[in-house]
Image (cartoon, rainbow, N blue to C red; front, top):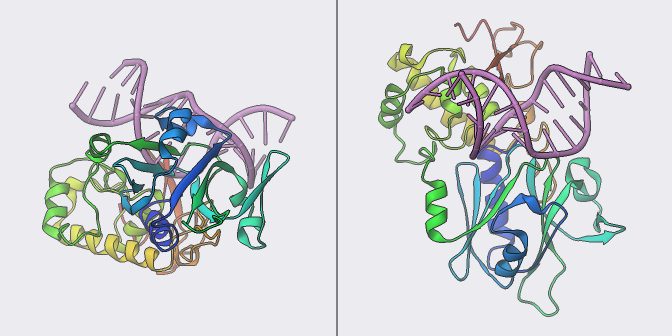
Amino acid sequence: MPELPEVETTVLDLQKKVLGRTFVDVWSDFKKMIKKPNFEKFKKEIKGKKIQKIWRRGKNIIFNLSGGLSLLIHQKLTGHLLLGIWELEKGKWQAKIPGPLAEDPMNRFLHLMFWLDDGRHPPTTQMLALSDLRKFAKVELLDQEELKKELSSLGPEPLEKSFTFEKFKKTLESKKGKIKQVLMDQEIIAGIGNIYSDETLWEAKIHPFREISKLNEGEIKRIYGAMQKILKKAIEVKGESISDFRRISGEKGGFDPLRKVYRREGQKCSRCGTIIKRIKLAGRSAHFCPHCQKA
DNA sequence: TGCAGTGTTGCTTC
DNA sequence: CGAAGCAACACTGC
């Protein structure tokens, strides 16, 4: 699922490919995906708007458009953006160029399609598509005030220079709860989900259920370092693709073989050989090594 | 075959 | 107020 490294990968790919281009038209077979405004108004307002900036905040992708509105996309569990050429055949979009867009089954759940103009004549037929198996993704067109409000509840970006160890330590001291839950709380730190919280805690040798009030300074330092190391590494290899996430080209990211615990229940820990365990925490799975990560 | 599991966010409930 | 449960979906695996 798209967490910070996957969203960052998507944004970097989009910056290279669609910056400066203009939305020509929109198609959807699941109009509920557009949460704000309603689909008809959304379509009318986005037509003719040029993409001036593409950026990320937490797990949100934001396109700043000419005229002052912003397009916000949250991919939730199974959403991912793709760029390619498709044609509608018998109500189904068919990718026109051989490769992962045509062949990878994860890239066929196309519920929202944007035609993009690149200012050339005639315009290209290239489209930006949102593939989303479970249809949980959120798409909104917001003015500056609405965007600001929407992003205001998010905690700091874990990879920003200003997010120092001292700030991280202070944040943890002001909260309570289990470390895994705290790392995944978007209001505390933005962008970390189930995969990277598990991987961070394995790297830091901290049990996911540890109460943050009982962590000493050395342990907090290990978590801080591990979080940055793992997130940077995952961005470097263009994210994970264990389930649905793909780059805008349709290709998989390279993080899957680097995973140490996530969805590795029953396998041996690469550090000590102990069998990886999975336990439930607040309705989610926590994967960890019971030897390296003592309770 | 049917049903639990998958995991993000926001809403409801207690 | 906060924690917990569930719904929004659809596909996989047992």
